[in-house]
Length: 128
Image (cartoon, rainbow, N blue to C red; front, side, top):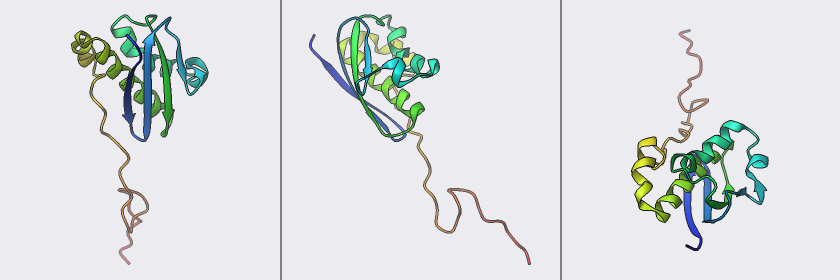
């Protein structure tokens, strides 16, 4: 197996992932996982698909990540890693699908409407 690549998106974040055989090192934008995502929760989100298929220390992962906030970025990386693992071994897809990692989350910010302060908020109504 050479390098397998995949793309994951969430909100405004886009993650390009390159997976190769290795020792379990995850590098995001030339920084270690713990350095890029200091929060243990976000690190957990990134590693979820690897933990599900028991492949935490089998692959080295290089990620190019841009756009969005840290939560969206971590979920974009999760989707990209999931897609790469499915490319490597299609047998793991049912396990990952049950956990809900295969589906791209379509939710995004609703656009602001004209004549309103935000997407749904209205200015205060005055009867007189």
